[in-house]
Amino acid sequence: MKTIIEPFRIKSVEPIHFNDETYRQSAIEQAHYNTFLLHSNDVMIDLLTDSGTSAMSAAQWAGMMLGDESYAGSPSFYKFESAVKDITGMSIVIPTHQGRAAEKILFSILGAQGKVFISNTLFDTTRANIEFSGATGIDMICEEGKHPSIAAPFKGNLDIKLLENYIADHGSSQIAMVIITVTNNSGGGQPVSMDNIRKVHHICKKHGILMYIDACRFAENCYFIQQREAGYEHKDIKAIANEMFSYADGCTMSAKKDAFANIGGFLAMHDSNLAIQCRNLLVITEGFPTYGGLAGRDLEAIAIGLYEVLDPHYLHYRIRSIEYLTQKLHDAGVPVMLPAGGHAVYLDAKAFLDQIPPNQYPGQALVCALYTKGGIRAVEIGSLMFGKYDENNQLIPAPLELVRLAIPRRVYTQSHIDYVAEVIIEVFQNRESIQGLKIVEEAPLLRHFTAKLQPLP
Ligand code: F0G
Image: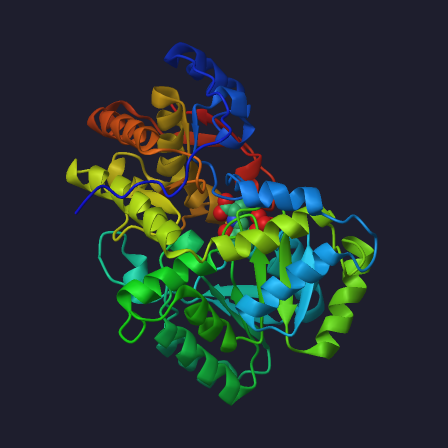
């Protein structure tokens, strides 16, 4: 088989700002050992997130010039609405400035003290928006999803038995909704099978529970279904997406991921009564229903991006490039989550730095080492992000200590990725020298964004 090439040519470039290890040591110290607090010009390869960091296509840039900035009834909105309806089949489309704004609106209406939101795994802002409404979020990831080194095709699946048992024990009246996150970002970018989505749909329908899809990476999930699930190998990505969304009552989406946009999102649904309440809140917090916090040009870029992401050549290259880095690391003995996910490579920091206990944040220690060694910025998805305290102020660690290297779409080439692999392997070979961290300052919610840390002696 020949090399899988990037399915694009590069028309416009940005410089990488080179720096050395001594410079980076001081930069990370000044950033309080939190890579969110770094200046991005001090980062050489930025794998902090795949969100809003995509390279837009020439067609998207051209579309931006067509953006119509009318306050109400812009043709750019109708183009956007038509693309979302075509792909999701939802009858009502509400634009928002990004994914979490859609979540905030939906959960402010449906969440309240005593309400429960069940998911395969809630993303951090999703959970925070649920908790902010007074409700509780419960993750029910399948067993194989809990083990980074076990290879299974659909490690993002929701545990059907757990859901059924929960309903049998507690009834369904307090369940505000079940949310299926595709792909399962916090659980390694692992996909959810169509079979699982269909089963969740049937359970929800039987018990009168709403089912929503957190659709940020819907196309990557559909590609995995096409490649791995019997009966889908001959279906195109759009048909798979149509079926997937047909099982849901609605969806939230961050267009900063699979729509290749730098900003944007939406809330879509079938229920017109709920939509009235959502639009009321939208007008107060985001904007008029035909722009919802976005410029007309953003709506154009999203409408175009939503179709570009369905291209099989793009998805083949995209998923293969994540697999390529995962494989290189795995071959060198680096503990990585297997199989490769859709948008990111996840290092298993618990195994990578087994000398550092969870209350010394091995994931964050590894993130800092990757930056200092190679100028690579990653993010911890472990006890810094998800840890809580018990009544004695002791850390209740997260189940997994992961480090995510999220790959922006259409941005880095294979040699950037080779460099990333070289740095990680070098850090792995010198892992004994890495020390744990302690938190010296933190916020009560979403602490990982702003926490200040210090290395332990
Ligand atoms: N849901 C999932 C699964 C996400 O990954 C994100 C964002 C959101 C919702 C919120 O969307 O950022 O547009 O408000 N994830 C980014 C990340 C930030 O780095 O994974 P948003």
